[in-house]
Length: 118
Image 1 (cartoon, one colour):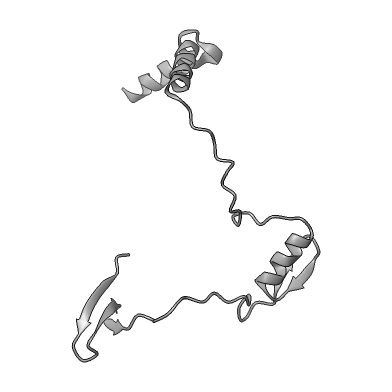
Image 2 (image 1 turned 90 degrees about the horizontal axis):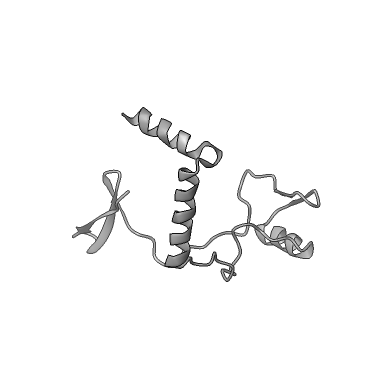
């Protein structure tokens, strides 16, 4: 949702408009707690079966066991290689050959799809 702002002369500041009332924007950085939160009985570390009370302790247990959290990787060196124009051309040619040769019924399937669109 798009955020909206308005100048408030009484406060002599620009404030964000939220649900028909003015609210000042918080100053300073956002702080993320290491605690798992109120009302949560802990975070279960599945490999060990232990109940942990903080995210950092959970990460430490993972590291101790040689595990990697999915989504926490910072090594992006293993990206898929970019195809060259010649490689794409070869893929298109192979696909055309499959259709022309009715490989695994490809041409029949394509003809049925075209017929259904009419």
